[in-house]
Structure formats: C-alpha cells, structure tokens
Image (cartoon, rainbow, N blue to C red; front, side, top):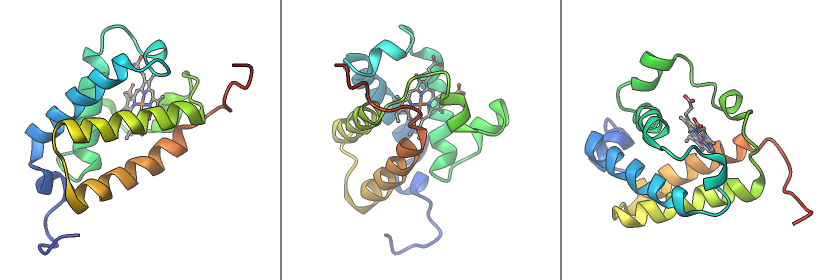
Length: 132
Ligand code: HEM
C-alpha cells in the first residue's frame, strides 16, 4: 500500500483532523439517508464522538474508544438496531460519499473502505424487509 511500512492508515490519511472530518461528513450523509436516519437518534453528537474514537483505533491510531468504552464488541452493540443488508449498503454508500467529500483518495482509501466493508457485513443482524 505504501513505501513506508511503519506508517499506519491513521498516519497516512493525516491523523486526528482527517478522522474528525471524515466522521463529520459521514454523519451529515447518514442524517439525510432515508434508510439510515430512522434508526439513529436525532442528535448525532454522542455517536459521532464514539465513531471518531472507534475509527481512530481501527485505523491504527491511539486506542481512544477502548480506553473509554472498553472492548468494542461492535456486533453486540449493534444488536438492538435492525441492520439489514440494505442498511449495510446504505452505510457504506454514505461512507464512500463522505470520503469523496473530504477528498480521501488512492490506495489508502481503498484499503480502509475494504476493511469497513467487512465490518459492515458483519453487523447485519436481520434480512431485508421483503414486504416493502
Ligand atoms: C452496517 C450498517 C450499520 C448501521 C446501520 C449502523 C447503525 C448504528 C446505530 C443505529 C448505532 C447506535 C446509535 C445510537 O447510539 O443510538 C451505531 C453505533 C455505532 N456504530 Fe454503527 N452501524 C453500522 C455499521 C457500523 C460499522 C461498519 C462500524 C465501524 C466501522 C460502526 C461503528 C459504530 C460505533 C463505534 C458505534 C457506537 C457504539 C457504542 O459505543 O454505543 N457501525 N451504529
């Protein structure tokens, strides 16, 4: 992915400032998404901060999320919410657009997106509603 094997994705994209910008752009998209917004609270302040902390450690930065909230156990924490394949797709589409918004490009973007795609698939906890 890169010539310097010691650099984490976190460092490669520009650290805290970039993660903050990405998370802000992402939830602005989520708030506008007809599939996603109904399952999120009206106020994104808390989830935005948690996601900032989670992504920081997920990308190889400081372990902010675990320091405050313990083991991520992401699938378990998502179980109270109906996460369908359709919503996983919508989540990833919001993330891809957020990456466009902040002009995150190149192999590091592809690498991060591929890893987030794996996690998103893992979060799915119920089938699509076929009655719609
Ligand atoms: C697959 C589609 C996904 C959906 C529909 C979804 C939806 C949600 C919802 C509804 C919440 C809770 C908001 C609240 O507190 O009321 C949440 C929390 C969270 N999500 Fe997701 N999520 C998805 C995928 C992901 C992925 C891929 C990640 C990580 C890369 C992630 C990371 C988080 C984190 C860190 C939290 C906060 C957990 C906590 O400490 O409470 N989510 N998500």
